[in-house]
Amino acid sequence: MDNDSLLKNRILELSQRAFSRGIWAFSDFLTLSEQDTLLSMHLPSPVSLDGGFPTAERKIAVFGSEEFCGWMQAPPIVCVQVKPLQQKFADKLTHRDFLGSILSLGIRREVLGDIAIADNVGYVFCLDSISDYIISQLERVRHTSVTCSLCDTPDVVTAEPDVSELVVASERLDAVVAAIYRLSRSQAQELISSEKVFLSGRLARSSSAEIDEGSIVSVRGFGRFVYLGIKRETKKGRLRVMARIYK
Image (cartoon, rainbow, N blue to C red):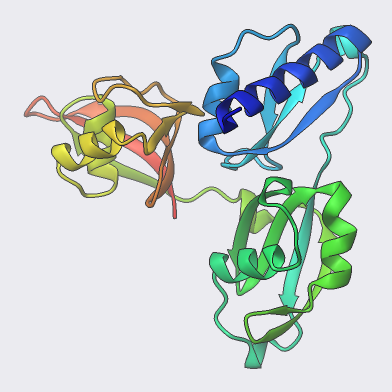
């Protein structure tokens, strides 16, 4: 059985469990491609996605609703702060450094969500079932000794970047992606056709798709942005649009 079939079977199993037992059920963290698969399925129970903060890319599926399962059960996501013991002598740590050090402990990628970095400190979103193990076992990232502890989601993770304004020919997906990342339209179209662009959690299947206000667009290798709509039309008939661009 291929990976796609295994994923669909697991999703269906969790959804049926939530529906038949009237309980909340949760998946591991899903990639954007896996989220697209989930959202394309017809399931017996309601489903939502949660990554620990609104603009997270990796998210768990939450199966159930208060109507069928009672009071909402908090999704099993926690944030682990990974901080150098001596910041002055620490390496400049990257996402790859934090992720590689955690995976070297024998941890599956599926139990880890997004990793945010601010001031050389890592904030690792993970399933609560693995947090104690990370805290007790992770002692070094790259050549830097670290200390780990549970923390609330920090403001630096949820802080919104300033609004950027760009001029585009239309609200077509390829036009906006090209403007955001300073690409040609053909380069943006290639990213879309290569299945590297996701629009509000769904795989973008057409360059001509129009972006709605509030949509979150993720582009593999570039980042993500929240589209905020049209500010005004220019004298030349082009559109001045707004977006929050996450690095």
